[in-house]
Image (cartoon, rainbow, N blue to C red; front, side, top):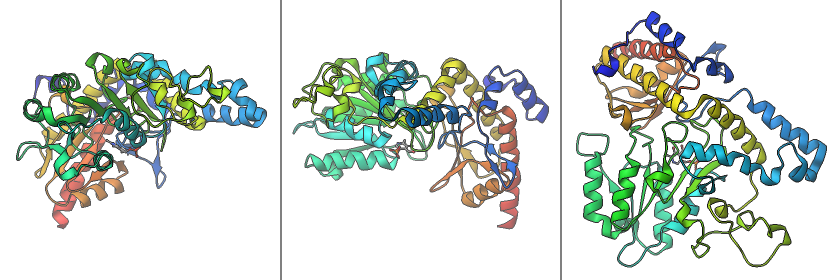
Length: 431
Ligand SMILES: Cc1ncc(COP(=O)(O)O)c(C=O)c1O
């Protein structure tokens, strides 16, 4: 146990006391908590799909009312005019990403934005054409990267490099990433990593990776699906070239929510960069003159293609307003305590065959802990579901659990570990 755990106790009273002293506890009531078979669940799956803010209905309903009342005029006269709706998300999105307003835009979905970024930022040359990803990158990132390699005439067998953890380890050591970049950097056109790895929950040192990547002449981008709304981001100061994220996980904007995109300001005035263009990325002053020549808006907005889905933006706006009130610094501070409590309880129980593959260091992880289950993991996960605990199972042997500071409690965490303990005994006895 570390000093970080010294004040924790594995009892219901202790968990309730932690909840009682949590200044963010009232936020839980702002979310719809799911039930199964009439029972409230312990929801620990915000790394997959965040819960619905109760205000979402009202925000979407306003757009439905304005559409009904105004028809096409809603583009200009809705309470939040649709023509510029995405702009009301800019300042909040910039704060969340640690970016300047012109560096961010909300549009499309994550993998679509990744493709748009790779069109512009994967610029292979005969000497430098490789893409570096994590060995256990989310499959969509791998498929997208491979498709760009093939598009440019390269065989992913030669041109896709993967960062492997050391044998017997799950997380990739920072010094190994640095050594890899120093060794292979000259051949790498693009470094593309998950800021928080979806499987292990490991947070990468994005500032250092970007600095080393740049020193080697690589472009550096990140998939922040598991980072946005989870950890503190400073994309501008870290000098990241580009990044994308979804809004349905920690950002609670609903299934298929509109995604985020960051493009560093040094590319703001680069109309020469190849890109897939559409009218929504065109200069706002002349867009409706329907000119023939594409004139991209300076900054990230210039990568937009289509007019955005207003109902999805409304859901995201409802959620971002909650983030603004709660504040990312306070959320992150609570998140470290909540996840620290989860780690403490798991280590306290020391269940045989259950180990943590997420780094111990709070700076190297977000809300999520990944539990590697040596045997019967799937059955164990099934038992948890029967006990109304929602977490998820990832092949081949991991249960991912994320207590989310906006709506989870310390008691949720204790209830989960108690249920895991019970399920563990039941599954072992019956096997
Ligand atoms: C790390 C990561 N990247 C990409 C995706 C794919 O996102 P989308 O289907 O929104 O494009 C996900 C989905 O969960 C993810 O976790």
